[in-house]
Amino acid sequence: MSSSTPERTGRLPVVVLLSGSGTNFAAIAAAAASGQLPIEVRAALSDRPAAFGLERARALGIAAIAVAPGDYPDRAAHDRALIAAIDAHDPALVILAGYMRIFTAEFVAHYADRMLNIHPSLLPAYTGLHTHRRALADGATRHGCTVHFVTEELDGGPRVAQATVPVRAGDDEDSLAQRVHRAEHRLYPEVIHWYATGRLRSAGGVVTLDGRVLAEPLPLEYADAQD
Image (cartoon, rainbow, N blue to C red; front, side):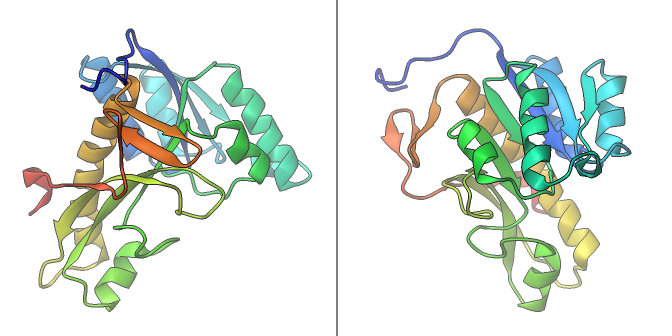
């Protein structure tokens, strides 16, 4: 480790945002519970009160909070309420794990350089939705996922690392999605570990790992996500 990047000590407090079943949340929480990931998951928040990810959180004894957009007059008001709900848990890092809403500029600025997202494609390819369908339609032979810091640009923040999986003959959206999910569940905890231990930092759009600027995302592969 570079001497210019001091290692953090203790467990980093985090809050996770999700909209769906919360499989990445479950992988992160399991890594934290086993001691592999030096973080304290203080809360899981969702825009959908019925999200199964909140049930996962409750089962683990983690605060599970819904901040439903329909309870607020507009997106700005909702995001301000979400900020208040997150900040009540005083996180050092906000982790997006399948959170499906676009944030206001105010929200993004509030968590600048301390909010990570994972996207199911090799960004900048296939920003937005239906990434597996689009990869298959294009005849792609490689697909995967990307962890990046969040900015106002949709899926466009500085990329940290990518995990690649093959597209197999006969794949459909479901089989390809399962392969990408296996990669996500390995990649995201690894990148979060870098941040929690002080190896990974972002400042003004410049990302460093061990004190060295990341001009391109680190390419990673996991054997158990190849088949």
